[in-house]
Image (cartoon, rainbow, N blue to C red):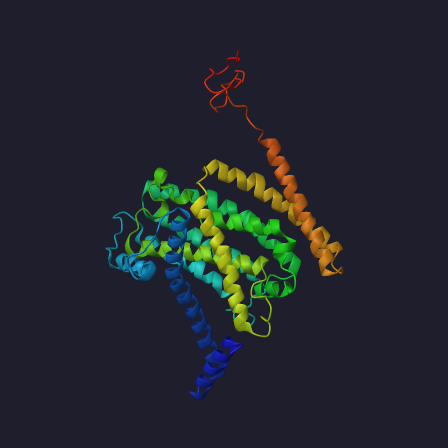
Length: 409
């Protein structure tokens, strides 16, 4: 049972061969079966992710969370799913019905499609594309297209405003995310995701390029539109955002796509920077490698849950400034420096090469922090912690009970 995936595949191949099915037809059956299994597994995983996130966030915020339906509230998500399925599916009278119905489908496909190239273990992956990283970038845009279609087709100004914010946020943060994804591609010399994982044997790219891993995590967090970047659904400003006109199962599809996308970010972080399924004994026992991959993916997903529970929402101008003035320039400089260092030290021992790459990340990060501290100097404050008015001198604070600006006797 060390390689459960090959065992099951051989068993199914024997059944199909015994039924007299030609090898070409059996290959097609296997491809369709793997795609169906990945899609169903991902959607079933959402049930657990919703329950876990509600319980984890509740504990972080000193609450209890779901605890009524089933043991520890495990069946609460199933009850919510049944409620969404049974609710009336309403469509605005003047909506573009074709695009309105297609938008949630694209949102789900854009997330589930990413798992086609993610290697779960040494012998378990959908397909090994030699342009796997490029496939991730192309497929991920389907979710953005679905959100744009949802806002446009709803014929609602609030939904349309949420769709416009999609262009400003998701497309903007896609730039540093793609630049961060280039780092493991450059270090491994391939865009194949199984090849990137294999290149991390003995040394994870997360140790050689921690700044790129951090930028990828932040940019992906913004792409999935979660706190502190959930401006697409800022309820206090634009009601419920792009899906304000959706109800029933179609609203549930947007909801499921968001949770599955959050876990997919953890999986991509594991593949690109944490060695994927790599670990002690993973090459000899691929089933053990799948457990390593699941643990690393869940760790990345927990970081997103933690951020959602603790960080406040930022303004849209702060969000865009952070993308275009901090993350994107930092990644451009980092990639240029990594290319030069990696080229010079290609034949060097792995510990020398890794140490030099890590040093480049530290230098770039220190430079970014230094520039940020200089561009945002501390503002002098008055007696009550407020900045002084323009042209006024800062007030001198005095002891307890003294009037602001008065010198003690």
